[in-house]
Length: 117
Image (cartoon, rainbow, N blue to C red; front, side, top):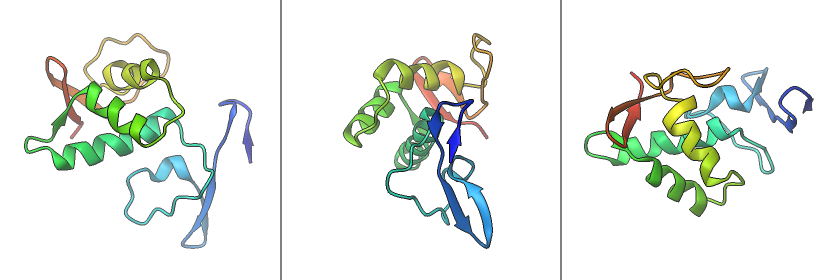
């Protein structure tokens, strides 16, 4: 399907007899990822942040760690896009500099972030 507003293809999955958009299922243990599915930058950052937080003793991570993990996974997003999402768009306690923001992460120290509880 084509989402003209977002300008990219979004993947629909069949799960429990319902048609569900992949981006609404990020991090779900029951998610089946479809080959060739274009995830948003937020989807990729959030999935990576969850993995990094789980592997960290204090549940925190840095933007550098997110960038490195996504680059090694072959992301199509630029480093600046990833950093902007971590430090601003997805950070609940960042200044409101964007028309659309998400409260997915919180900054807990200089350069350290964790998933918003």
